[in-house]
Amino acid sequence: MTTLVTPAVPGPSQGGPQSVPPGGAPSLQPGLLPGSVPPDVPAAGRPRGWWRRNAVWLVLLPVAIVVATGASSFRVWAFWWPAGVHYESQRVSLGEPAHLASEYLDMGFDVPERANTTVLRELDATVTGVERVDELPAPSYGDPVPIPEGSVAYEVQLHFAAELQTDLSLCSIALVSDDGTRYGEASPDVLGNSNRCSLPDADGFVSEQPEWDVSSFVLADPDAAIEQVRLSFGGPDYLTVELP
Image 1 (cartoon, one colour):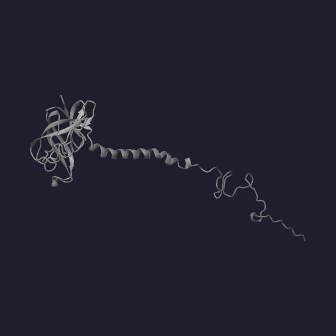
Image 2: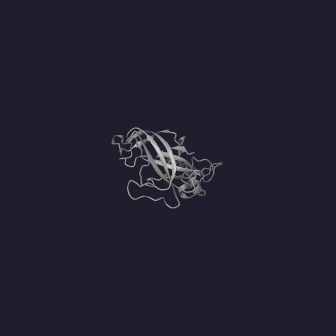
C-alpha cells in the first residue's frame, strides 16, 4: 500500500514566500488597495518648513498690527485732544462780547457738592484792549518783575460776566502773531498769577462777582506782529479775538 504525502506550504511565520493573488502587489496587505500605504507606515517626504508651519499666523499678523495701532491711536486721541486748544468755536472782533459754553468734569476742589459731576460752564467774555507796555506792574506777592531783555510786554484787558461760582480754572490767554506763533499760554503768567481770568485776590478758581475786569500780561518777541487774542479754558475749543 502506497501512502501519498502532500508537501507542506510554508506560512508567513516561516519566512517563506507568500502567495500573490492574480493582479495583486507582493507587498499589499489584506483590505488595502493597490498603491496605498498602510497606516503604521509614515509617508515619505520632506518636513514642512517654518514658513509653511506659520502661514496662518503670518496672514493674521498685519491684521493684529492694524488693530493694535488703532487702539493705541484712540488712547492718544482720548488723552491728547481735550488737553490742548484745537478747535476754534468762535471768532469775534476786539470789543465784541462772546458767549462761551462748554462742559467739563468738576473735581469739587472749590465747590465740593459738584465733585465728579459734569458741569456746563457758561460766561460772557470781552477783550476790551491790547496794549504794549514799557513795564510790568508789581505782582501781588514778591518783588517787581522786569521785562526780560529781548522781549516786549503786552497788557490784555478783559471783561467777564458769569453766575457766581462759575469755574474759571485752566484759563489761558495767548497772543497770536501773523506767523501763527502763540505767546503766553504757559501758566502761571509772568507775574506769577495761577489763573489769568480770576481777580488777583480771588479765593479759589471760581467767580465771586457777577461781573469783573482783569488784566493779563504777556511777553512776546519784539518783531512779532500780534494779530489775535486766544481765550480758552483747558480746550479743546477756544475763542479767537481779531485785533485791528
